[in-house]
Length: 108
Length: 118
Image (tube, rainbow over all chains, first blue to last red):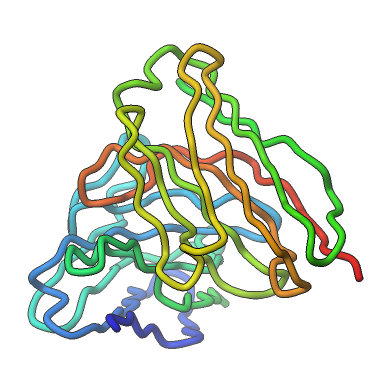
């Protein structure tokens, strides 16, 4: 069955670029979206269709997807970006949505 | 801006049926898929399934035998039914709007915590 793999954690310093990866077999052939979840809150979509930003999401959030890896990039990470980030895709073969295991981003 | 509100019992007994409702604030319910997602305490997100008002449904294969998701457009409500629950079904349950067709969730409810007791 199709699976998405994310690193469990990532730590960056304020102002640095944070790159969170999501890997899956031929993931580049599918659309990927990314969610941010702060503690105690519902997830918030920050990227959809690989690289589209919803209204209200800061420009420092960007996405890419090619080959077997999708990447969420946060340019100039801020302490308010500390959260869990989840990638998600749609597997047409099984008509199922799938989430990655999540990456906890720490900015300190 | 549309808002979603989950409701239902906070506790369900093991082996019984969990039933939740998601109420949509706007009249655009007919234009979207509507998904249910859950998150056990301290763990990641798990997609349960989705429904389109025409009746199309998609379910996570491992839950398919126990799950039913349906929509009542007149009430602007999406329902989730999960049968034969166990402790493993304890989680925060979210409903979310899905513009489709490739299932991304652009609006989420606040979630409701459900505990399965033995």
